[in-house]
Length: 201
Ligand SMILES: Cc1cc2nc3c(=O)[nH]c(=O)nc-3n(C[C@H](O)[C@H](O)[C@H](O)COP(=O)(O)O)c2cc1C
Image (cartoon, rainbow, N blue to C red):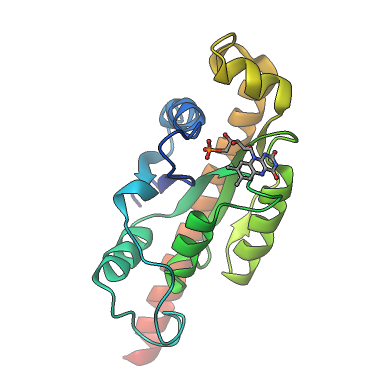
C-alpha cells in the first residue's frame, strides 16, 4: 500500500496572515517523517463562495465548480493537519466554510491542528475537534499550541519556531499521531472497499 498522503491545510487567507510561518515549519517537520507524503493546501487557492448549495454534499451533489474540485482535492488525502488561527474564540470562517464544502471526503481520516494566538488557538482547536467528529474524522490528541509569548516573539522576528524545543516536540508528536491514524484508517478503508466489492459481486 502506498504511503498515506497528508494535507497541511492553511486555515486563514487574509493578506497579513501569520499562518505562513507555522505552515512552512510544520510542513518541514511532516516532510521529514519517512512514512507519509505531504502537500500544502492553501485555502487562498480555493475561492469557494460562502456555502450556497441546496444541501451538504453528503446529501446532494454540489453545483459550484470550485466546490466540485475542492471535494476531489480533499478526497486525495488520507489525513489532515490544519493551521488553526483563532478568530473570536473560534476557527476562521474561511476554514469552516471550506470544511462544509466537502463531506464524505473527510470521513474516517485523522485531523490534527497547529494553533496559535493568546492561548495557542486552543478554543479554535476544540471547536474544530467537535466539527471533525461530526465529519466522522479522527481528531488526534497531540496538537501544537503556539501561545502568546512565543507567537509575538516569532511574529516580531525575535524567535524562530525551529528554535523552540517544546514546540518542536509537540509538532513531532502531532505528526506521529496523524501518520499512525492515517496508516491504520487507510488500510481499514481499503479493507471496507474490498468487502463492499465482494458483497456487490
Ligand atoms: C477577527 C479576529 C478575531 C480574533 N480573535 C482572537 C481570539 O479570539 N483569540 C486569539 O487568541 N486571537 C484572536 N485574534 C488574533 C489572532 O490570533 C491573530 O491575528 C493571528 O495572527 C490570526 O491568524 P492569521 O494571521 O493567520 O489570520 C483575532 C484576530 C482577528 C483578525
